[in-house]
Length: 229
Image 1: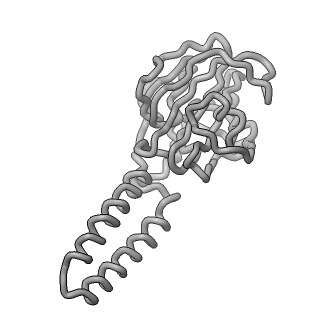
Image 2: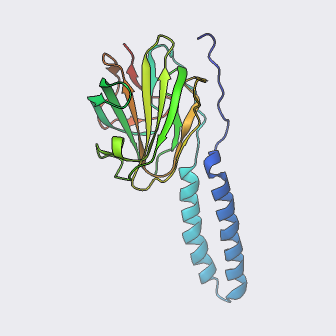
Image 3: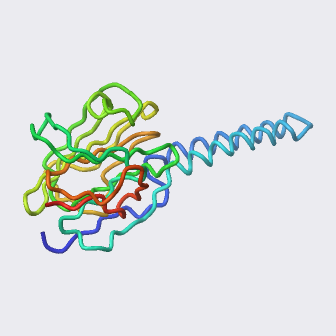
């Protein structure tokens, strides 16, 4: 594929949260000023700032977006598309696109994890499809097919196809996918973003070798989760 192109968005706070963080901060400051002027006691002001300031910091933590670079050889390498914990490593029937068995590796993202998603392999995006659905708890097996999800199919330089599925969870209500049909894509690029608790499944060709174990923590764009055959 030639020289890899780095198109990282060099941001520390994810763009998906910029407006929410700014508007909520302005609202907190405005209410805090009103409380300070209305009451002779400082207690209402302090209580409000303590509670809503803490909540704002939690939201700020949720929207953090580390700048990461994978420094290893990317040939036949599959990197974690998300921060989280490995909850599935198994062969599974994939009947929507492949109609055969695939190695499925799933990463569960808690509300405390970074929720930016990364491209897991170098290649070309064949298509991106979004499906409405339910909001079961993301770690349940049926969530992969029944929950709202966004599918991105990537074909590697040697012709192997990798399916990445972003899945909404019980709390998640918005999936954003930046990948576009037929564009080239690379490890280090952002695939998208999922708000609140959620999950990402990766379907790989049989013969791929898992490089992670059940329950293992992953770091998006850095942890190698498998090697393609």
